[in-house]
Image 1 (tube, rainbow, N blue to C red):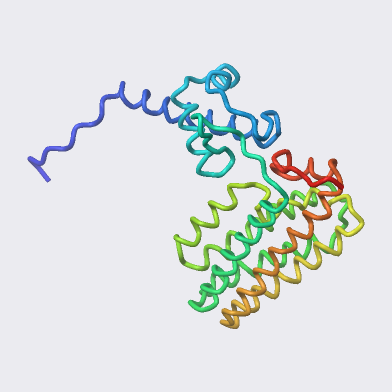
Image 2: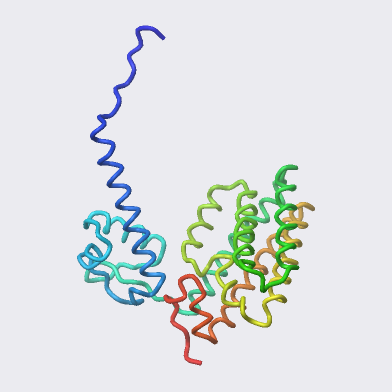
Length: 262
């Protein structure tokens, strides 16, 4: 409207500085996360801000922000003398993380069933199931087959979570899956070379179908129980992977897991 004063734009010089600060924080977070997950920083070791600054090439402020964020994710933990240490996880920690994810995803499946889903969501689920069926039924030795399965499986799990219609539940699932070994596909690559690979993928896909059917039938309790049982496949796969250091090397964040002696 004529005569109405528009708010003044922020000075151009201020924007790049803020953007640079945010970019440096993200860079520090991603770089430090990768060092932790790869095991280049040993689990249990104290994290020196100065050493991290020198290693990844950013200032101390973004490094501090990265450490705080990674503490919220659970990958580092505060220590009494000040600062942070890289966190180590026991096999039981991993099982508990998987169980927590299953509990939350079970709740999401129940809410989706009880609240009902629309025609578009139904078609999306059926399309995902069809694409997963194709991968599972195909030759497992084909190039990138397990990468395709991981991508589709992650998409299926995100879809179920979104159908709950609860940002509260969604945020909590995102939080637990910040621990990469708690994700739905964490142990897929570890099992890829095993003789049981086909059987495990087939069982997982049967469970995908059963969960979707329960949601479509508005059977909330059944959908929840099926989803929780589905998550426990990951615990079974953990037991198999724990027998081999080579297999554990295929698990995202496997370097953080302290295995029990055989």
